[in-house]
Length: 593
Image (tube, rainbow, N blue to C red):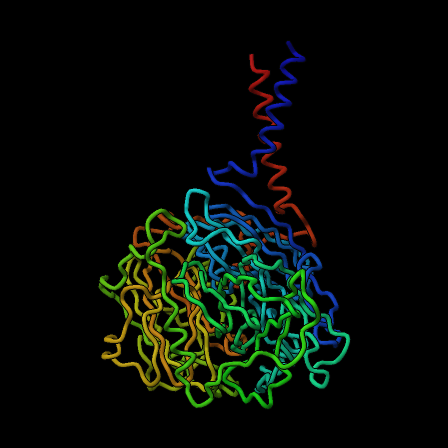
């Protein structure tokens, strides 16, 4: 009997070990162990320091499914503090995992920290990146693919393959050198090129592209249809994306299925993500160019700043040659790109993460409870420093994260007095926060009075993009809003001298970052946080602070020392700990009298 009991115990333990990653809290777990470190790479032919994850640049794609729990153990092997943020992932009532300075103390060099969050009721294409000090300009980014559950239909046939493509402007200077330039009051200037999946351009022009540069090749089969998930992970440059002689059927952006329509090219602004279906319907007499070229710049000066990859059919008869496919010819028509953006609408006839149709949320009939007009200006000098602002305030992160200060009732860390409209007050530096109303409905108008395109992102939320136009926003502008099928996303462009209006339902408790995704302007202060507190108290709807919370600033004395490069809180140990606990439990049950 004892031998039989042992055999049963072993079998149960094996089953428990197999299930521990798929059954905790009722939803599967996905575990990732990342070592974030520097490597030397030469994407534009110049050796430079690049941030890699597990020696990969770009980092790995996280492939998960709606409602999965994600556990990411991050080991910081850089020589400076680190945070990873999850662009577009709406961590429900859990801003503790957001990976920005308003909610998290940085992970010190040589330490590790484990993120744990759920991709609750989400689908779509997103990306992650290091959020501190222009580190994204050195890499450290990667993709997040959130698949539909089997019970939720996808509004198109299963593609024959799935490609993730990172595009973005790139400098050959280290991110630390770029930081110093900004600290010294200088512009970053024209980037050195555009990368595709961390690689430089195909040598489409011998005079513009030097020999020996590694380029990206996408291998496809004729007649098949593939999904391309394209992310602009660059510093500050809007890019036009196109594939020579192929249509881009837009199907999804940042978690929303869109009306399916073909584009010959699409402007993708910094921080934005799109999914296209592309059918391989050409005769493959040669390979085809995949191009990402800069927008709203002097193209004659920026000729070298073009990303070029290769689409290679298995039956291709030769290499791509000749001129690149033309970019949009809209130098004299500044509304072309805006009209293209307006054409992106939500597919209200299909479901997404839940069975109910996306369009059943009738946002156009909800009463707005708060209105904020956020105006940015060209950089200004404040206290001798070159800074960027929203409503005249340049955000400076305090040493103590805002959410942590609230938890321990530390006063004076920030103020809840961010102005609802631009004011005539002299520009200032501080930590002024928007006081959002829990379960309220907020209208935010981004007014761009600078000369470059800005993209604005809101952590913890998707918002409905309901309107955009040139000129100054007025109350009458609401008459132009799309109140039916405006796309729901987390990042929107705002054209220079123009405005963009979004509506957002403040149902996610926490303190959430609203920022420009343009890294230089973000670094210089174009940012604000929105506090959404449950009036019933901290522990009613918001997730509790994690056991492994880091402390800094006014709370630094609470932080326990961590052995450099320790792994006690790693995701591997979490898994082992759960398995060991189950082993003890089941063995005890088997041998109980």
